[in-house]
Structure formats: structure tokens, C-alpha cells
Figure 1 (cartoon, protein in one colour):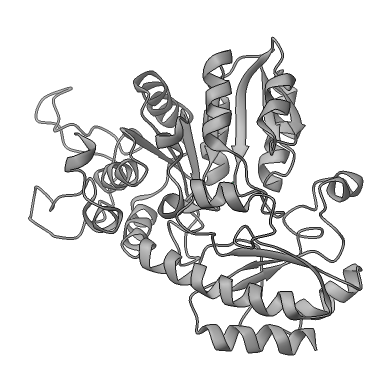
Figure 2 (figure 1 turned 180 degrees about the vertical axis):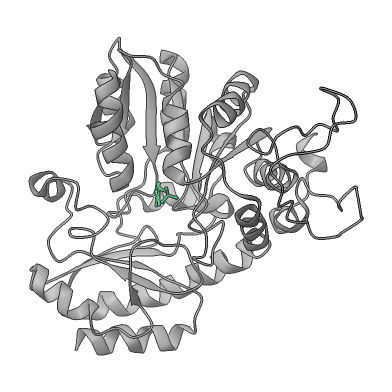
Length: 385
Ligand SMILES: *Cc1c(COP(=O)(O)O)cnc(C)c1O
């Protein structure tokens, strides 16, 4: 389909890749809660034989996700990490992954504690400067693993520059687009081979489901991933696929509002004299601000800040005083969350390594939700007091 004929993003959230159920005309995709399908003769079926291989609710979600990321194929898995696991199975022993040094903790753990044991090594580098990345590529390097904005430091990585390097050097480029969501950036349009999502976050959007997905244009990788989806079997159930389909219908509205709320909160935090530093790509003095303007539709709803009293205790005291910001892991839901990367999401990364990337003991990460902005601001300022 030519780009001109493609509907705009909001329309894709609601209709992209979807049509009424062919069996009944049901407007909303039914939950096909079945593990198997009747065959009219041995081996003769209607395209569905067994539900690990294929399920209509999952297929609907996959075509919706492909449409959101401007890809040809989406392949869903039981979690974001299961999706990552299947992507890493495209590699062979001896291959090396070059990954961002400011990475989701679970992704770091999967690379270092699981895949390293199968002979797939990883090196972690600062990806903010594309020329450094090009210089780090070795003969063994086969994959660039990119997160942007990064977690929890909210650094920006130039997707177009890095996918260009990947093409020159024959590497597979993977963008973990969980933090931005396809509403804010579409990495396949910037040259990426594969886009990964933890659908647990903005896509699901209501903190009620765990799921992952990979989106691509590339026929060969897509067919291999469909093969692995069935062969390895880390598939999501139909009920969860329905929940993510439902969540996506309001993705554009949710992320738009969450970004507006984040902007308000950032302004208040910046003026507060108990706050040492605010990390947010929307700030004009953020080193990735110009890139964020080019690469993203808005600046996102993840905000990190640290305290002048830089101790775990000070951060912990603040986080126990908020009322609407719930102290919890995860992000991207309608409700605001507050977290402490050093003891929560990034506890598996050694302290010296955390400090090297600026992840201080008092660093606090917010996932700003879609509540009333005034209430969120009051909640944070009360806790800071
Ligand atoms: C949560 C998350 C993951 C892992 O996804 P799960 O669904 O929890 O397995 C990967 N990358 C990022 C950036 C995440 O936030």
C-alpha cells in the first residue's frame, strides 16, 4: 500500500489491520478461547490447526500492530522479554550484540546471564554518539540493540544514524520502542530492521496484561520469527490479545495527554530547590533535545530526577509519601507510577556501572499517567516537602 493511501495514526489505532469478524460480523475482535480447530478432512482446515501456531484474536492484534509501526508483519509473544529472547535466537554462537549501556534491566540480564552462556556475547556502549558506535563494531558484531529514549536516564539515540551504520556493516538493527510507543516514533521508517515492544506498557496501557511484540518489514526475519513463535511457544493467550487490542484503541489519546502532564510536572520539578537534576528530552538544555524534536512527535511521559540529598533513604522517603504516584515497577499505564531504579528495575546492574551512566542512589523515575495534572503536581510537591 502506498503511504498516501494509509490512514493517519489515530485512525490506525482503531481500524489498522482490522475488519469485522468474518464468521459473525462482530465489530470488535472476539476472544477465540480455543486451543484447537475442527478439520473437515485430515490436514484440511480454515487456516487454523492449533492455537500455539495461530489464533484469530492474536492474528488481529498482530496485523493491528504491524499497521501502527508501518511494518508488514508483527509477531506477538508472552512478554517483552520473550519477544527479545526470540529475536536473539536469530543469532548464532560466536555472534556479538552491541547494546546501549543504559538499558532496561531485564534486557541486560537476558543478554549477560542467559545468552552469554550460549556463546552470544554482548558489549554495552554509549550510543549517543553514532561515530563511537561505528568504531566499536567488531568482526563478531551481528546486532545493534538500541533503546531510545533510554531507561531511566532518558538519553536520546539517533535511530536513523545508527540504522545507517548497521546497513553499512551488515548488522541487524533492533529498536526497543517500548518507552516511546509507536505514537511518538516509528523506527522502521527510520531504517530499523526490527522493532520490539513490551506491550505491557503503553500499548496495553492499563497495567493489566504482560505481552511483547516484534514488528518488521523484512520477510525473511518475519518468517523465522513466526517459526520460532510456534517452535519455542512463548505465545500470549487470546484474552490478553483482546486486552491489548482494546488498549491500543486509545493509545494516541493516552500518550498525548500523558506527555502534556509530564511537561507540567517537569516545569514544577525544575523550580524545586530540593531537586538536583531533571532528565526529560523536552527540556531545551537536554543534550538530545534537538534530536528528540526531529525523531519524536512529542517528548514522552517518562521523567527522571534526582535529589540534592543524594541518598537511597531520601528517595525512599519521598516515594512513600506520594498518593497518586503509586510506588511500583512498570510504566505506560493510565495511572502514574513512581519508582527507584537503583533498587527496583536496575538492581541487577552493579552500582559502579549504574553511577557511570548517571544513575545515582536518589534517582527517581516517574511514569506520568493521565490523571488531572494539578492533582499530580500537588501530590509530588507535597511529597517533596
Ligand atoms: C518492560 C520492558 C521490557 C520487558 O518487557 P516485559 O513485558 O516486562 O517482559 C523491555 N524493554 C523495556 C524498555 C521495558 O520497559
